[in-house]
Length: 276
Image (cartoon, rainbow, N blue to C red; front, side, top):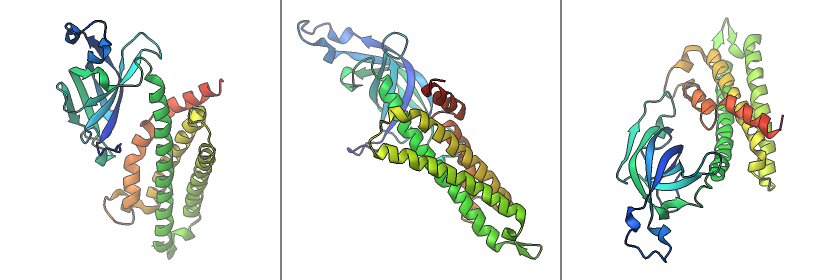
């Protein structure tokens, strides 16, 4: 994310080890609020951080208390803090995201960098995931539509056996199936969007958002495959040709299906939200 101050920021949602460095308060007046002089010490590693190589700050989740939902705190950690290291990962797709492994080796974080109240960082993480899943579902739906658009465009001009591809029943049925998936996904996203725009609580729609993400990513996977079948080898080539967008979409299928919560986790979340 890019905040209003021009700094790049990314999330490191992982339960790192944390302890409080009390050595810095030895000479402080004990009658004052000594907490502002405390520092937290972070140790741990988190992989698959999108934008990690470009970020100036990391939002880090670390366990500062006991087990369970409480005991998790959020911190703002500067990339230049001593002990913070970043390593670029080579990914299948999402090449512009600079997916990163971020390591924290005895990183001392001022208490002033604590975000919110100590031990109450779990809920902000969950609410952020809802927004992330909504955005990924919208993106996957649009990419699926791109595959459908390019398949129709190509099928109208490419000729086989003396007629356009679109003239063959098997191709028309592929396109119809892609359209059915895209329209169903678009309708679900429109319903959720109207609810949110009308004031619905993002937390109470988490089950619907989970199902929407699964619907969208499965639609993307289906449309990317079927569009590739329509264009054949042209959908296997990178670049600006007739199958360029389809090839690009196909590379992103897995990150959309896994990122922000895998399809399996999303289905389980939806059933729990429905109290099944």
